[in-house]
Length: 88
Image (cartoon, rainbow, N blue to C red):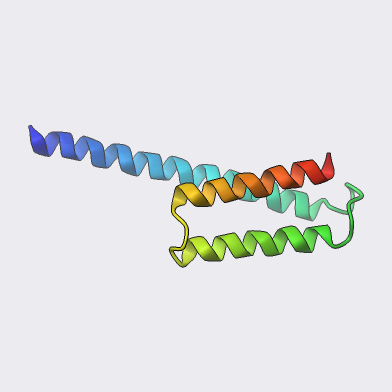
């Protein structure tokens, strides 16, 4: 019985990680899309570079195991929210 419960917990954990990775991917796509469309949104010319640098910084921190997947998603949320606030 214990092995089965352990296997279910592992499956849940892996499924949760996959879901979080897919969520991070959607956020990155949205951020990159806004960088690509910055000219049509009439934003400050430095803005796309600033957002791109922030995205690279937090992604590097995740790759170097300085952030957990959950923390990475939270950082992406903050970056996405700052993008919306700046454009809005």
